[in-house]
Length: 296
Image (cartoon, rainbow, N blue to C red; front, side, top):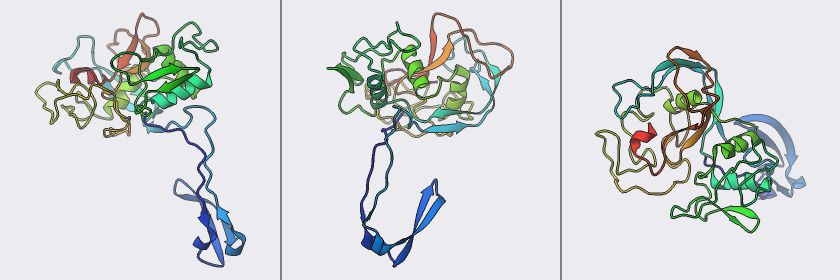
């Protein structure tokens, strides 16, 4: 998700900018005055605006408040490219918060380096010490992370592209590290739909101006103005957000959910957690290399 870690930022303003012998400095947060102080022009050399370093990698992740409600999970039998396991059922969810952007290479590298995770991608002190969190990128599609010397580093130019080749364990460890959890599949679909009932939050079509996927393979009878795909990830937040303020819910990279792959229920559910056992974990949303139908 498009993020750049906050760093110390100092801006120096000469005292001459103050307009009166005694002026007032207003301290604002979110457009609200939280403090004000009278200051004398003659007593000021400079004003420094300070934004502290975030000690925990990823702690600066922006989130959107997702208001709880009821929706129909799954897809109608008339939906094109529907899979037989997409049984519809009513789901009621409580409110939750979700990160606005996919996690970037820069963010994930900071996490790996802070935890001293080596080239094998394993986190000995984590909840899954024998599991690989990430695989270094070394193939034709080289827009992820490399292990160089003793550090994980993003490929130049892809610092703010979404991290890829992360395992479910790696996604879970990162979420835990920043004080969150992976969404379960019901939460993910509710957030992705953003109040819509169509195959995409953008309606019945998903264009090259709305998501990064294999543009040569649009959905159903839809068309694109550009049909040659990028064949790579994009900087997160490049395309418009959905109605809930979430970016890249369709395309760019697949997104892990907390659940194991399992059969959908046939009765109404209240805050379902999804299957807790099974051989596979759920991924949703499609990617830069997938047809539009997989982005549903």
